[in-house]
Structure formats: structure tokens, C-alpha cells
Image 1 (cartoon, helix red, strand yellow):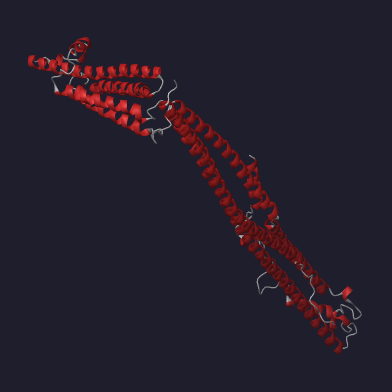
Image 2 (cartoon, helix red, strand yellow):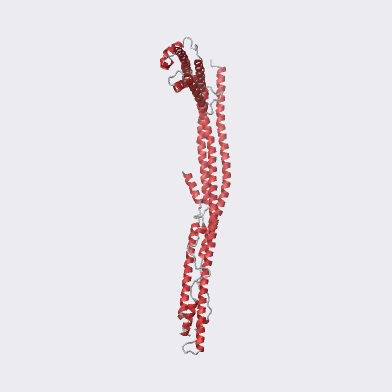
Length: 534
């Protein structure tokens, strides 16, 4: 559980997921700024401006000693409109800056510290290796116990001169017996179907029942009876002889009885056919006791071919079942195959553990490689998205600045046009010596400059540069982790090879000690045989 938590923590620290896939859609401007390219932003009419300028000039407005503080109403309206449009541009660029900042916040990664992650990886790998060592030690001890038990059994039963013969696959004898059971059942069913009132189905049911008992008697006679012939204990030998004799005789009796039953059935059916009353025949008419009495004194006295076929087939299947009972499932010596198989399984479990742990560590490193590659790809995509944010905010800055300049230019053009018409009207009236009109105010001669609030996007640019720097730092940290991980993977492979070599040597030492014990036991038995105690 601790290893799983550590692995999950490493994955969480490495992982970086791009918050969105389409940066352009995320940065799309919802409401554009300004009107069409050639359209006026202030929407003032030059014709109306000209009328107002003439009207104000005739009324000596603004007065000759006037200043910008008490400018003409038309100029004030143009200036108010310019300020309103500048405020609109500022609010619009602020919205775009907010979109850009929120996007950068989403792109901002959690800092990766390669030393922390590689330390956790190293701890996790060391934990895997320690657990593997402990489990290998446990399985080696179990193998040692199995080896000692086998050595003791071989010594006690004088089996040090040979190895156990244990089939690699227990399904082989099962398959053989199943095939024999089916073949005997089907053939017997075909032979019995003429004598059964139910026809082929009835014959099959009888045949399969007889085949089952035939196989079962053979297995018991061989697996329990004959195998105990080889046991060194006299009582086990006697029990084995008794069981083999009883079940062997039962098997022979069953097969001879079935053959005589079929022979008697065949003779009876011929008799009925001659009398023309075969429709009244059924197997229930034949007395088993009568058939059993006719078996003696000569059980081989069979007169019909189907009976001989049944006898031969039954004896073959019974013999095959007896053989498989002796040799098919384990060694012929009772118990020897069990201890031998136990040692083999313990050795395989020990060998499989090394292979499994090698695969586990390989999968761990492969998973880390995938996670690091995915994180690096996502970080690179985020860095590209950051660049797009910079391009986006620069474009919006240019749009806002262009809008403000356009507004300022239009405002200055209207004000200049107003002043020109106003001054021209005054001069014309002064030539006519109108007493109510004076010169145009002095500020009419001032040069009009572009007037707008400068848009500031430095904060967004700084934020984007900071996020891009953090993304680049994370990519560098991941590259350091990848480099460390490949070196660690190579050293871990070497450690696994060393562990496997050490374990193989330990197993060989255990086997060698067991063989030496068997050799000493064999020499002791030989010495006792050659020089029996007086």
C-alpha cells in the first residue's frame, strides 16, 4: 500500500494536463472594438460642424480672450466624445487582459523539483527490491524445507538411487481415460442397442454405466493397489496386494459378466427370431444370476462375436485404466511423486518470482517514461499557448492603440475644421466692420496633439514571461528526471541480474547438500548390505 501511495504521489507531481486544447478559441474576442475600417468612430457631421462654427463666429463665441477652459460647445462635445471612446478602448483592453491573465493562470504549472521526485522514485525502487529480497528469502526457505523433506523421504524409503517420474501434465492421463471411456461406451452402446427396448439411447446408457465402473475399478486397482506393491513397508505391500487382487478380480468379473450377458442375449434373440416372437424380448427377461452361473467353470466359453468384442474392449480399457492409475498421475512409489512435485513447484515459484518482479519494475519504469513524455508534451504545448497569449495581447494592444489614435485624429480634424470655419467667419465679419465680432481666441492657433490614455500591457507580458519560464524550468526538470531514470533503470537491471545469480547459486547449494546427503545414505545402505551386523 505504501508503494502504491508513493507511486501515485510521483504520478501526481509529474502530471501536467493542458487545461484547453484550442488556444485560439479560448482567446477569441467576443466583442470587437470599433467600427469598420473606413467608418467614423465619433460620428460627427462636418456639415453640422461647419454650421455651428459659422453660428458661433457670428456671435463672437468663444470670446477673443477665451481659453480652453471655456471652449466652444462643439469642441467640448468632441472632446467629451473622444474621452468616452478612449474610456471604451481602455475597458475593452482590460477585458482582453483579463482573458489573457486567466489563460496564463490556467497554464501556470506546479513547479517540479527533480531531486524530490528522483528521491521518491529511488525509495520506491529500493522498496520493491527489498520486498523482492524478503519474498525470495521466504520462498528459498520453503524450497529448502521441501528439499529436506524429499531427502528424508528418499532416505527412509531407499529411493536415493533414482528420481521420481512425475508427469508434467495431469491432463494427459485424464484425457486418455476420458477417450477410452467414450470409445468403450459408444462401441458397447452400438452392440447393446439391438438388445435394449430403448434402442441406441438405452444401449448407450447401459454401456456408459458399465464403462464408468470398468475405468473406476482399473484406477483403484492400479492407483491404490499396484502402487503399494512398490512400498517398502510390508503392511502397505499386503494391503496393496489385497486391494489390487480384489479390484482386479472385480474388473475381470465385470468384463466377463458383460461379455457372457451379451452372449446370452444374442443366443436368446436368435431363438426368438426362429420362433417369430422377437417383439416380446427385453433385457429384463435375462436373469443375471443365470448368466453368472454360466460363466463357470469356463469363463472363456463365448460363442458370439459381439461378446468377444465386448470382452476384449473391456479388458483393454481396464488394463489402460490400471496403467494410468500406476504411472499416469504420479510416481509409482506412493508419496514419492508428491514430495518431488512439491519441490518442483517451490523451485518454479522461486524462479517465477524473479521474473515477475523484473516485469513489475520494467512496467514501473515504462509507466514513468509514458507519464514524463506526456507531461513534457503538455508543457511544450502550454509554452506554445503562452506564446500565443503574448501574440494575442500584443494584437489587442495594437487594435486598442489604433482605435484611440483614430478617435484622436477624427477629434482633432473636427476641432481644426471648427476653428478654421469659426476664424474665417470672424475675419469676414471684421472686414465688414461688424462691431460685435472680435478676433478668434489665441488658443485657436495652438497645434493639436493626439490625446489618449496609453494602454499598458506590461503586466500581462511579465506574467506570460513568468509562466513561460516556469514551463521551461519544468521541462528541464523532467529531462533531468528522464536522464536519472535511465541510469537508474540500467543499475536496477544489473541489481536484478545479481539477485538472480545469487539466488540460483543458493538453490544450487541447497541441491548439492541434498545430493551429498543422498550419496552418504546410499553408501551407508550399501555398507550395511555388504557387511550386515552380526
